[in-house]
Length: 225
Image (cartoon, rainbow, N blue to C red; front, side, top):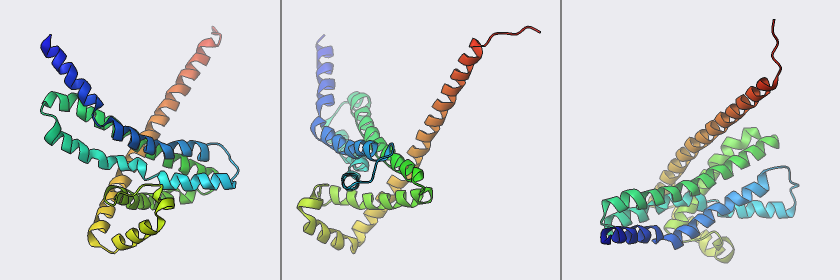
């Protein structure tokens, strides 16, 4: 019983660790996803409020792929905080995996909704270029957030400092290299995730249509020759 109580305490502690910053980062990652549902689904008039929402969407969008960089905390936890292989394998790694999955999925769906909106507006030709530009901008945003510790709202509160930092970092070799690597990673993961999402949607629609057709056929009267 003592061993069970001890393991239960360790598992509960591992589940509770990092919840504050994980919850905050996940909330920031879901902000652009929530905005994409309002901005890009359905047909909305492009009013001043709508354009303001787009600006907020773009400002917060880097927070979604930013969760990929939080894997550094997983490495730190494995190296120093947890001694049990079982706790690491069954609690810590799955917790981080779910955290990163939800955050990055929010990024993928946000851009997919944006792409669908562009297609409905007659700009299908611009979807790929828009995605690539946003990946590049988000790579810059991720660097500024991870290494320079800027936040999305610093576009309003520290615009001068943010602008100067961007200009300084873009002429330095190391930051540019980090941004390029980040761009490659989020671009590759995005198109992989997008392909998987589209495949799941196609499978679900095919299955639903097949079941609907089968039910319709079952209701039809049988004719004997």
